[in-house]
Amino acid sequence: MKKLVLLLLLTATAAIGLSPNVATAQVDRGSESVYIRPRVGISYYMGDSEKSPVNFDGDMFDKFPYNAGLELGYQFTPSYSVGLAFRYGDYTQITDFEPQTDTRDHPTTRWGVSLLARKLMSSGKIAPYWAGGINVGGGDSYVRSVACANNVAGSCVTQNELGFGLSAGFGLDFYINPATSFFIETGVDTSLPDDAADGRKGNGFTGWDFLGNNSIGLKINFNRVTPVEVADLICPVEAVDAGSPVTFTGSVNAKATQPVSYMWTFGDGTTAEGMTVSHSFPRAGDYTVGLTASNGSGKYTSTKTCAVTVKDPCLPAQITSMRASNMSPDTQTAVAFSANVNGTKGTYRWDMGDGSKMTGEAPSHTYSKAGTYTVTLEIENCAGVVKRTMTITVNPYEAAICREITEMNSAYFARNSSALTDEGRAALKENLDILLECPNLNVRVEGWASAGERKPQELSEDRARAVEQFYVDNGVSAGRLVTTGMGRSGTGSKKDGLSQFRRVDTVPVR
Image (tube, rainbow, N blue to C red; front, side, top):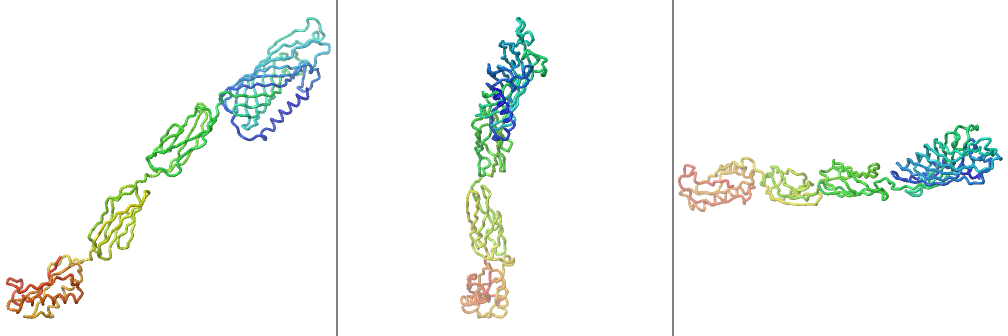
């Protein structure tokens, strides 16, 4: 039997020392719950009758030194608890050194009640722990005396004195499931006064007696709180539109003790409650969205976050109108283009119709050649591409004189002649310079004859054709000339004298 007791003590002590290296997996033993801890084991005693728990010099084999106990307590945290423990055991060593002359069966059972605090030293599957507290206990015992030991009648006095003292213990807790664990424990209750436990005092031992046990048992939690942990968040991966509702969903560990509360923060100063929520961000930007879950009356919390990118909503582009600063420019005038556009801003691409490509909301362009051009605006945004066109007519460049001239030189002829004179050519040369400089300027060539000339109509036509030919021969397009014979000139001409009626006028036409 003493080998068994010794083995239990050595096993518990060695396991406590080695356990931190045995199991490192973290487990949840719960918190905020009521528990019970039934246990059974072997009792041992150290005091004035026996000074060692393993040195059994007396006859202890008549009875088995059993020990049993039950603890009821409260688990505050996964590692800390407080309980009220009741013990009852048969401490047979109390009678180890009775004189052989004493043949009576001395009482050896004792009881005790302890208030214990217990602290686990790790959260692994095999967790060492210590316990400490105070106790009070009692039980029947003989007051030791020589006369009692010699069986003198009436000399043995039975006492039932309460003892009190400190309690201490060490053990290993083996995790089974969140509500149950198995434990091995060695513990001891000190007892004062010196004779309260064994009826003997002043026998060379300390002023304390020790009632101990080596036990095994189960710890069972009731209404335990499993801390909540946010397991996952379902957040949008792609950028979302500002002002559009977005759904967020969270999940927690399935074994979390209910009720669980959920609080979302969206990074824009707003919050929402619930496992699944919908939220609209007011403006574009990058936001950190967080879910905090709590249970155990708010004692346990867990938070997880995700990043959300918010963009302005994508609206299809609409080109409502196109404008040009000058709808009839010339080849030296820059034209500024613009457009009224609704929708999400995009990229502007302009085709000016003459092979030129431009970008930007308001480009400026100068056409090098006269003509009619189709201008195309293409806008591409997040919703796609839209197009619109407009037409612009470009005129050749005109100098200021082209816009201001109202009268040109006349060419004069000899009587009954349609041949140009040197003086006439000189006058027409000035007209020719203007016509070549002003390609937009057209003219009407009017031939005249004076009174007394033969065949005045034919002569006026011939004179007009002579001037026309002069212009054409010198680079003026015939399409710009309208030639007509006006016949005989009447009186009242702007020129005095009949010689002034023999002429051809070049009249500007716009």
